[in-house]
Length: 168
Length: 168
Image 1 (cartoon, chains in turn purple, red):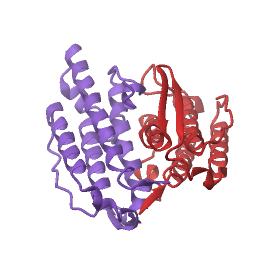
Image 2 (cartoon, chains in turn cyan, yellow):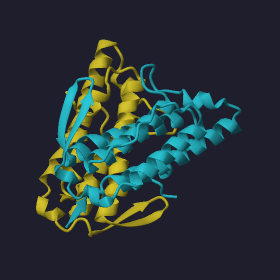
Image 3 (cartoon, one colour):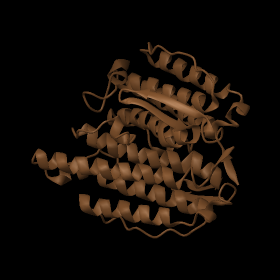
């Protein structure tokens, strides 16, 4: 018995993006309750040369978008990373959810063996769809989701592991 | 074409635990180079009520251990969380790697449908092996791996995304 490439990608990304939206809601409520400017959170970062919260959310959306589109062999939309408010980040997350959940499941039938090429600053990386998803896309996606969580937590937002795991 | 439950668990956990060892090595070297006591990093945390680095490493090891053992239907060893030095954390990681990579691959053949029960503070959670792995174990594992990374990064250790993704 085995998993499908679809099961290991789109629903996993979608669940965590939905969590990310909830975390942002809690961040926004925290800022309002403590009379903080939203930018106190949106521009917060854990180290001077790390991405701030806004960019972590954009990167998580990109990771989900490419992590779904590349194994499926479909062309993803372009997103210019112009979001600067909580509302705009929610919009970016929703657009990403709409895109990834709109990919035909059948496009994943041959995804495990599909060649995937990723261009990085260090050159081209060549994967099979399976190695790309498990060895690159999922770790990279969670990197940005968890760092967004960690930034909010570091700034005092009242969130916990149960929120992250969507345990209700 | 599909993935095996084995492919989506043991090698994913093993790769990231090996990365975690490398990150800890860089942390230890950073402490030595800056005349910091190792506990400056090992006891560092991102919020007063979050786990410190040592506990994040222990939790990542537990997440990999249970995330492999439960779907495979095998009983994992007990680990009492007594580590307090970089060397002891490396030992814990190695013990975890030895355990998870030692599980017979055949034990994963029926893993997707195997019932998995997790006891949490909020009660029992019941999953199939597939839903447990994709919806709980992998996100929970990366939560602790990435937060360990974020703590080291926040404390000024010279690590980057390429280290996290093991791009060399």
